Length: 491
Image (cartoon, helix red, strand yellow):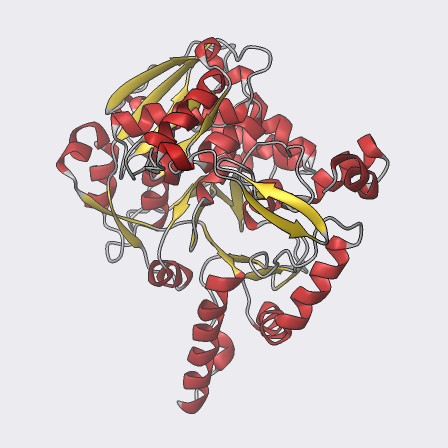
């Protein structure tokens, strides 16, 4: 890791009674602790996902960028959210990938040049909040179906992007508050989940919830960790980097209750297609979706992250899973220290933001309510064009033939009956081959979906691009090395 934060160390220290330190709110000098500053009855009824908003407003309240009336609007969420009121929000950090991150770093460099020309100290130009930049959008699959594919593709990646990578490496050491994760470390979403996500920040002894915005899609994966995160535009992200609040409409929150547990043979992909279909039908654009209920304890964090990842597909700003024992187990599994975990749990419990299924649950107020019995989820796929066009696996063949017949659209190709059995013959490396309607031509496994590699024809371009190095380790353990995967799975 490269960066201006102690060589990449993420500081999450804390201990003892310092977990909820007092601080001044809106210049009034009151001794308040976290969001305990708000009215108890209103605070306890707030959805977990909304509680992050008043905490940020209270902590950043200066009667200039964030005013006390903004705090009151958020605290009175049940009454104000239907009125589409506007509020300021300052995220705890900003996350970038290399394509959208380069312009942001260029702008910072230009500001330094301008400061130099004005005779000022250019070293004062730095991000005001932590910025994490993950280089993951530059790789492409030139080499496939080969044991040296990873090495060959990475060499090409460095050759093509040498200038950009050198510039970002300079930025990692030139600017304070910036961490750059080098190429080959994994996809930004997974790096964020496994390493960058703090859950709770500790800045000079002040603890506060982690929250993040990012200039790309599917930032919402981090919502599965109980960290509020969503996608924004480049201008908004740069403004946040420079300490300016984002202006947003106070969102409604859809409460999605999960009951029971998934049947054997049903996986996270089946669940996420089902959830996506339900939420698209309900209408959640511009809203938060918060998952709750006894079924939560049966979902692994990986399953939660898969559902949260699909927020852009079902249209919500984020799909939020509050922190519970499953979250703590995951952050321990991914190498966070016992001290950090204790600090996170203590802060969240003190501020009534931790879900303990062994204790009576305070009923939250939501804008609308949905419910799903997990045992009702069945194996399915989605498509052929839209993620919410869910198809039970047992109906796949009939649905495909119907799509061939239907008029051109999301569920139709209008292929004449006489052409539906058409066969195109070709030669692949000297070997005769055939293609028909419905044949697979690209098979890729990425970290954004939970799927498996099909048995494929030799001309199909395949790729296994896991977002985490952990995947390599468990494949090595199972198959005795990634070369074993190549041989067994024909990747």
